[in-house]
Image (spheres, one colour):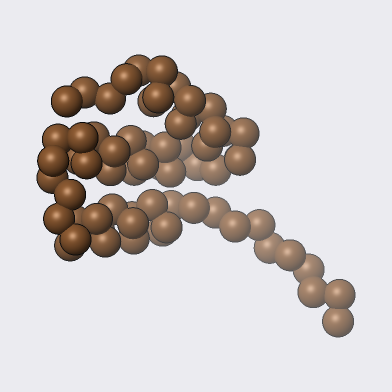
Length: 65
């Protein structure tokens, strides 16, 4: 089953608002498409999770110490 285009747009908007790379939206969209197609084995979900986690950028926070 295809994802609703509004969901994909909302996902892209959220990723942009969070100042994350476009790869985060692409990987999350691929994961959701896989789940909607019934391809959600534990191993596949772990791989998708790791791919999304790898794409997320975290700002460095200066330590006050």
